[in-house]
Structure formats: structure tokens, C-alpha cells
View 1: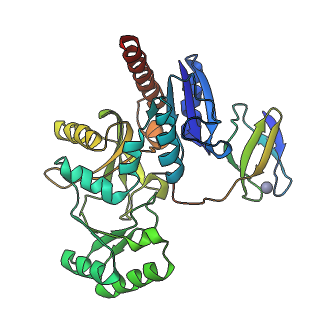
View 2: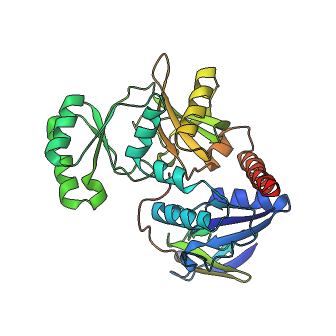
Amino acid sequence: MKIGMLYSRIRRDEKLLLSELRERGHDVTKIDVRKHQFGLHDTTAPVDDLDIVVDRCLATSRSLYATRFIESYGVPVVNSPETAEICADKAKNSLALAEAGVPTPETKVAFTKESAMEAIEAFGYPCVLKPVVGSWGRLMAKIDSRSAAEAILEHKATLGHYEHKVFYVQEFVEKPGRDIRVVATDGEPVAAMTRTSEHWLTNAAKGGVTENFEWDDEALELVQKASDAVGGGLLGVDLMETGESYTVHEVNHTVEFKALNEASDVDVPAAVVDWLEAKAAEKTAAEAVA
Amino acid sequence: MTEAECAECGTTLDLADDLETGEIIDCGTCGAELEVIDVNPPVLERAPELEEDWGE
Ligand SMILES: [Zn+2]
């Protein structure tokens, strides 16, 4: 198949994907989104005869707009702009999960310092304040006291970009020192790992210890529901154990899988390419009917 | 193995054969983030700074 990859940086994840695609003999077109323009009817990017485009843009705005334009040219793109839009924003993400009946931490959004303070006090301490956009656990704060809350809200008000004027306050989930990262394709789990850390942020980027995760039916069902809730795609679903059950913190649409590839026995890039091949075939079949 | 010069400090870097345009490489000597502009022969430039929140 002819597959395009939108990117502006090639990381280890993208290299793994590229080499898997090429090993299988696919015709890969790398599209550096920094070098192209996207018009209302056409683009300078070479997308015309592609069977599918996979978005690997790291920058949220590039991902949102480039996928929207590519889709408008009638070229199938994963993840879809709809999925990207929900996943790129923590508030939309939380709302989508809650609407789909997926257990997710109690969350409030407020627009002023005063109102955010009321939300924080209502949650009690500790609670968590996050930017609505952002990655790798950056600028996330665990708030232990009223004085800490006042200081952080003041800093955000003084230093913040406009996106930091949206206060996303969340209950603090007591987890057993680890969280679970699942990579899934349209809700079908590819691989999962647990990340354990002394620190409350257990992102692999922050140096948590990773281990294989043992599946149970409930986790499988929640991953499927969480994926459906954001419109499906190649996704990273973050779960935490709450004793009896799980809570889903968020679903990521620009999923990194190199850590998972190393931590698990599964060949993650191969599974992703299997899925891309199936998606491209669906599109071809749909065209044959039409 | 192929080689290129660090755009920041001029050190000669040994590069993997499966180099990709757009790949980011760290210079072991000066720590600069370098972007692969061309692969044959390899050309490295200083990588652009992170401009917004990205990643997952
Ligand atoms: Zn250097």
C-alpha cells in the first residue's frame, strides 16, 4: 500500500514504524508538515494517491490542522481529526470518558483563580491541577495545601499562556504506586505495561520502572469503551487501579510506544502496521462498492 | 557507520546507517539537539526548539 506519514520530528517511535512499513514492502511517503501548505482544495503535500496517512506530528496544533485538511482531500487519516481534538484537550477528554460511562477521576474546570480555588477547596487536599493541553506530565501540580494552591494559581495567572487560564482541577487518585499504559488499535489492546515510581507522576518519560501488565476482562472492556469514547484510532489509554476496579485518566492520540515495545514481548510496530494495513483495506473495499 | 559534523561544536559524529531525514540526534560532546536534514551524505543542523506542548 501507499502510506503517508505526517511528521515534523522523527523519533525512535517513528523510525520503528518506518522500518516495519518498508520491510513489508510498502511505499512510504514522509511528509514534513513544516514544508507544506494546506489549502482549501489542495495541498503542496504529496497526498493524492495515498491509501492512508498516519499522523505522527508531535505538536498539537499541527496534528489538529494537518489531519483536518488531509481528511478534507478525501484521504483517510489516522488518527482522525475528531479523535485528535478530543485527546489533545484534557477537559474534552474527561468529558468524553464520563459521557461514555468510563470511570474517570472527578474533574472540574474553572476560568478564574477565585473559582479554581473554590474547586480545589471542594476537592480537599491533595488534589491535582493540570494544564488542559500538555504532555509528559509537564506543569502538573499535586496540591497539598491551601497555601500551595494560592501560590500555583498566582503563578499560572501571572506567567500563563491563555491556555493556562483554564483551570483543570482533579481529584487525587490513591494508586498502588503504579499506573497502567495500554496501546490499543480501535480499542483492541496491542500491549500494556505498568509504570511504577515513587513519584506521583509515573510517566515513562519521567523515569518510572516498567513491567508487563496482566489483563483482566474489566481492563479489556474499559480500554474498548475509552477508545470508542474518543472516536477510536491508535491510542494510548492510561488506567490506574483503584482497588476493586480501574479509573481511566486519559487517552492519548500521539502515542509513544518505544518504551512499551521494550517492556513487552509484543512487537508493537508490527501490530500497528497490521492495523494500518487493515484500515487501508477497509477504505479500498468501501471505494469498490461505491 | 557514516559520519557528519555537529552543527554546533564541529565534533565528528558517528551515525547509524538507518538515518532518517527529520530524525533528532543528540551531540555527545556539546549536548546540542541536531536534526538530520539530509541523509546522503548526512547533513545536520541545530534542531528547532520545542514551540508548544507536544507529545502525549
Ligand atoms: Zn556538538
